[in-house]
Length: 86
Image: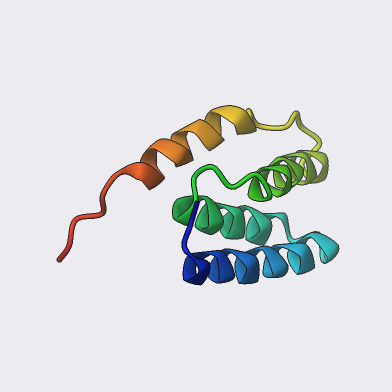
């Protein structure tokens, strides 16, 4: 469970994500979901948006949606790694 400070940050990101969904800006939706999942890899609110971005992008490109669950697993692994300090 993220701290209150981190949860507020996640909430702000997800608010922006809602706006990006309304605008059908699927690339921005994906970027925002990636950000939320890096903070909280188990965030269940970001996952439906991430799936929607994959479907939206696929529809726009007339192709099949990417395997989001595989991408999400990879993001969770990356998010849990410690970021080296410069």
